[in-house]
Image (tube, rainbow, N blue to C red; front, top):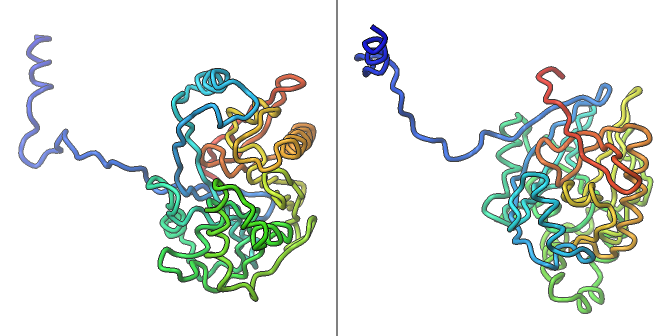
Length: 316
């Protein structure tokens, strides 16, 4: 009797029934996640990721074996470093502000998804009022323009750190730059040169709208900036590239990433920011955190921290 039932259960479905086989999708669904900070709605949008082969240069002051061990402890591939990109849209009710514009598809075939995810989120590029830039690395500014050269957000004011503009748009700095930075200088010129007169530059601690304030966070680049978003009793720190890959540089704040232009200053900034968010138990959004790239930082010891992802919440 049992054997007969088993055979019957495995029999093909009759005409009109569901088929067991279905083609694999082969890609992820849109990467969109919304959450609230007080009365302000934040939408996280993935731009995809890049896989960088791991070698001894990735962390300047730690043996590559230690870096592999940290990745292994996080259950990640140890031959490469998966670096994700997540922009956020801040909706204050009267303003729509995009913080960092993604890669624009210039960096890797697995990146450049921001425009698609904006559409999935129901956000029209023409509705964006402000594109707020944290720093001029290509993965943050490349998406300001489409590959055709047109502005991706045609009605938005482009707002950038004064110190970043002074460095990356300086011909002398470009001429003295090592080969590894030449591409970043060229991207800055491609993005900003045609709109040079219209780009607004901001100083440290600028308040852009009520509740959104710049936090100086130099070291990663000369004018690298984080942001504090406040509404009512709630706060979010949008800290850009302060820690880059959290399994490496949150856990080991003394490690120096290859991307940090002034490693000592970047470490000092990182430690200051880690102390601030752990002491005040602040919510943190990191550009290179795993999507949806928001959570808290827990102190594990005097010199070690951990990123704790926010629980997925179906209700805003």
